[in-house]
Length: 153
Image (cartoon, rainbow, N blue to C red):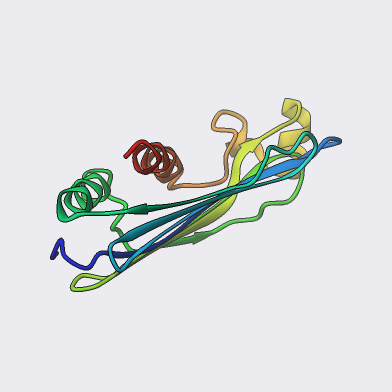
């Protein structure tokens, strides 16, 4: 993939379902040599929303693309799972445009809460150990790392 003209749309959101629900959404958009980062918070004890715009040179662009490739975030995956009931649901969408476009879209429960009986009744016994219904859960960790990487540039 060419390192010039990187265009990326990235959204990572976590939503807690509980008595004191909250949410955090991070959006990163890269285009025309600029990085736009929006962090939005909602619900109980919500943080302050922030917006940042950064310039980007070819070296920075290459570092970002290398990170994306290293973490396999340039993969075509679609996995949409239920997000109801207690716990934390996750939403991840990464769209890369250009010579080798890709789209990664995963939704589901990143952390299922409750007693073993509750989980068995509402989700099924197979989720007792993993506490997630997402098969491709590793991409959420990689996406969290990408956020920290881009913010730290």
